[in-house]
Amino acid sequence: MTALTLSTAAAPGLRADAIVIGVAKGSASGSGKPVVAPGAEAVDQAYDGRLAGLLETLGASGAEGEVTKLPAPAGFKAPLVLAVGLGAEPEKDSSFDGEALRRAAGVAARALTGSKKAAFALPLTDAGDIGAVAEGVVLGAYSFDTYKESAKAPKAKNGKAPLAEAALLGGKPRDAAHKAALARATAVGEELNRARDLINMPPNDLDPAAFAALAQTAAKEHGIKVQVLDEKALAKGGYGGILGVGSGSASAPRLVKLSYTSAKASKHLAFVGKGITYDSGGISLKPAGHNETMKCDMSGAAAVFAAVVAAARLGLEVNVTGWLALAENMPSGSATRPGDVLRMYSGKTVEVLNTDAEGRLVLADALWAASQDAPDAIVDVATLTGAMMLALGSRTFGVMANDEAFRTAVYEAAEEVGEPAWPMPLPEHLRKGMDSTVADIANMGERMGGGLVAGLFLREFVGEGITWAHLDIAGPAFNEGGPFGYTPKGGTGSAVRTLVRLAELTAAGELG
Ligand code: BES
Ligand code: MN
Ligand code: ZN
Image (cartoon, rainbow, N blue to C red):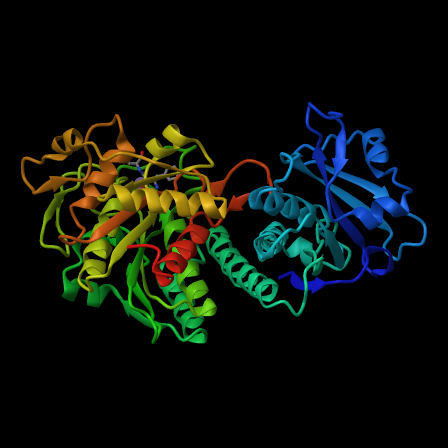
């Protein structure tokens, strides 16, 4: 992981591989040309105030994601100045928003892969900005090379190590708020990267038992209580949903309960994650073209795991329970068939009409289990439906809830931390599509509005009177395109920051 420090040093004397500065798109009412962002004054002075002009000559516009490299001015200890685009220049008397800084820092960190140390001279106005830049660096520097033997060879071409060290200029090492922002960004960023590692791990190495074992080890390190229900315990407890989904696999399912408790807590939040370590579709097998990325179907569980560990590392004054519903969905002679009826942990029966609608089955059992502790609120996270991807695209997750105020709170928390999200409804009329002739409910309903149908199914397994929200992260969980901002290719760690923010807001008494 990239080591972060705060530094009051001046740019010219800094020993580093690069100085990162910001460049913005000048307002149309102004020059319309690229403008150097605050924080880079000393650098601009060393170029005799010609930096903006030099950048323009080099083709820079200040657009988001843009990287322009130029040789550092004479007398600088660092050889390179790296200008990163921040997008539109803010209005007069306002500053760059946190997400613009986070993305720019991420782009710079990625562009500096292979470098040892960089100094970030970006526009920082408060501790929040320091947190944003720090988070952007830790997240942008991420890479997953565990399985690249070629990258480990001494002179390998692609074997560039992530940026090792980042100094944030303008941050005060003795300022309590600045230090706290850096510590928070480090904890959240590192745990989010841990979630990405889990998502990127190939499914032959990360089966339910392996995931549970990793959770057990990490949780113990951070004083989190762990309980793992294996297939025998699940059978004894009557977890028909999780067992039904896992029955086709040679790797048995698990239900993991992580309990972080604070002596100062007055509220209790439960997070529930869909953890299908591989979703082949089961007997309702997915066609080729739809299963290549299905190792990502445990992204919800990875997010929940990361959020609980982050809450513990931050010592948040709230009790947080994480539930990881882990199973592998495979076809075999022992697999659940379309037509089978499962008796769920809640006692309800479900007719399985499509074995590829497996996420709602494992979540149903975990939601009911979570409800037994009567938490103040439950939030589940799942790569649940292709329909949500069709509705919101690949960068935005849908938020559904049984309480409108809570849905708004979750959506606003997501927005605050820079995670695109959108509120979605749970239209009552879609419930009857799941009526079953043989069981209490079927696991499939109308095709239209499939993401909402899945949400309505889950709602039936939330304990009476408990506030609940459901995040369908099928779109943003796994980035099949190129990297952008601080988001790499592959597992993204979607929803981790929203969950952590919800825990913070609950601890502060600002939620529920
Ligand atoms: N894991 C998939 C949803 C998914 C699709 C996640 C694409 C990420 C990318 C889920 O288990 C699934 O297969 N859902 C079905 C439900 C349908 C059978 C009712 C779907 O969306 O097609
Ligand atoms: Mn499926
Ligand atoms: Zn699935």
